[in-house]
Every structure is written in C-alpha cells, then in structure tokens.
Length: 154
Image (cartoon, rainbow, N blue to C red; front, side, top):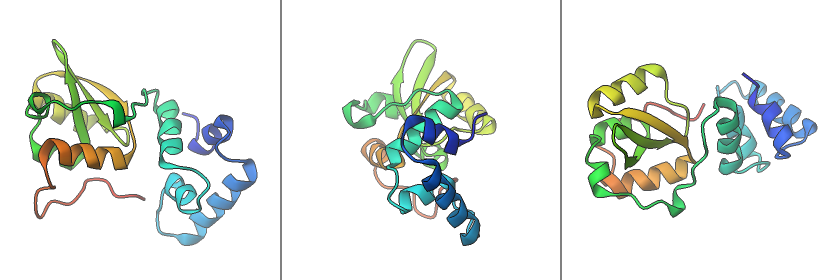
C-alpha cells in the first residue's frame, strides 16, 4: 500500500518539503496524530484532499455527501448506535447490498458486524468526517449519550 504522503504529492496537494515538515512535526508532537490531521492543522491541505488520498490508498471511491439525499427508510436499516460507533452513514439500499459512506476505511471486524446487523452486503465509499457528522445528525439526530466515538483523530 502506497503511503498517504506519497499519494498527496502525486495529487499535487503537498510538496515534498511540506510533507517533510509535517512528518517532522508529527514525530515531535508525540501525540499519535495522523499525518492527514497534521497537514490539515498546518493549513496545507483540506479534509477533502486527505479523503481523496485515502480513497486512492484504500481503492475506495470518494463520495461527497453534499449532493446526496438521505432516505429515512435507508437510515432505519442501520441502528443509530452502530452508525455512531463506526462513524458511517447508510446511503442507499439496493437488492442485496447497502451503500455506506465513512470518513475512514472500516476494519474487517466492523464490516462483519455491520453486514450481520443489516443482513446485506456492503458497498463502501469515503467522504469527509464533517460530512459524516452532518449526515449522522440528519439520519439519527444527536449522538447517543455516553457513547464515545470508536475513532479519534490520531
């Protein structure tokens, strides 16, 4: 798998020098923050730039949600707690599959749990965390109290 920094350079989102500065800052911070978060914090890239690079890295299509209409019927296929736990939103139900969008690739264990719960195969797209948060609120309302997100920006 190609490193995210290399993909960002190929996309023209960062220069080699900017990447090196961000990697140095990431190393010095010792906070475990992901490279993409460091680059965003530095004002070098946007969240959409990072998601497009992740799309390339994980070979998953990028889907901006701003032009997607979420259906209450589709949202009801996925329990609110599960959607918030794994930070994904159901987009569309097809015959034997459901399209979901997430801001990060969902691990195998999570995919299995989602598939077992909805009893459908999953087709996954990537989008920005801001769009996921807005879509989750649109589908389900506020996050369940006392629940912490599975993923934090590292």
